[in-house]
Amino acid sequence: RELGAVSSNFDYQNVELPQTAPEEILPDLDVYDDQNLMTVRSLGNGHFGYVDLCQYDRYRNGQNEPVAVKSLIRNANNQKYRNILYNEIQTMRQINHRYVVKLKGVTFPSVRIVMEYLACGPLGKYLRDNSGKMPLQSLFHQLYVFSSQISDGMQALQEHRLIHRDLALRNILLNRDGENSPLYVKISDFGLSRVVNEEESYYRGNLDDFPALWYAPECLCPSDISVPFQFESDVWSFGITIWEMFSFGEKKPRYPSLPSVKREDIGKLRELLSNGERLLQPEHCPPEVYDIMGLCWQFNPQARIGFNDLQQRFIALAG
Ligand code: ADP
Ligand code: MG
Image (cartoon, rainbow, N blue to C red):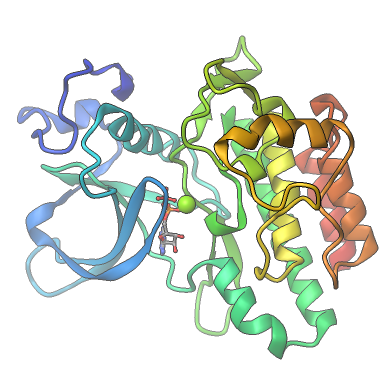
């Protein structure tokens, strides 16, 4: 049954899940009892939510399991935000992939998202802290590997007919299997993601909350009209994400003719993109990587490169 199908006055935040069988609503989801969950510290805030590191003492015997718990932004008790949280649960539970953050369960009785805790933190922070300390060649090698991993994870999302809609450097986290094992990426933040029906190839969302600078031109329509998000729209955002990576996390995407973008500027943004303007090549970015960005930023969605090809290209670059 679809969680989203619960009636519109259902209070997601404070309601108790049906006493009889929460598993009926959330099959396969582990339930984390709020009472045994202790917040350690904040891990970050985003547009819709905040994420805390918590320790879960399942059997109240001091054997703690560290988890990351995502809640809605404080006071966000309206339906729109609750739907975002439930949507995120619905999406995350469908995908089990090495390069995608894993959903572990939900808290009970107040519903929050319990994820695996990724102690290595966001890729952007890692790049800001370490890019200056590494020889450029080894930094690039690492960025090629990360880019191929993100492509791999995105390919898996598409195989599950999922559109992420918020692919950006801020939503790429890092993990490692052990202290001396290599770092690898985890695609996170499925708050805006959508499952697209077999019969459709796009999702119509609205432009309310929205990282316009990461968005493909086909998503930049006037706000009152619904927007067709396609699988290929995620490829455009991937191009922006690697632009941020090869700027070492130090720059926000900005177009030369539009130094800042407000909601009113969405039409201008679309126009400059349709005129062929693109983000400039980052200072240290290898030309072959900037060429790949160009393949992601084809105006016509059908002309864009796919995640499979992207993965192969970055594997080839990593050598
Ligand atoms: P939002 O939807 O509000 O943008 P995110 O899911 O992007 O929320 O999370 C916000 C921040 O919390 C991230 O930028 C990251 O720093 C941190 N974070 C999120 N999930 C995890 C996790 N599983 N492990 C560690 N940190 C996390
Ligand atoms: Mg986020």
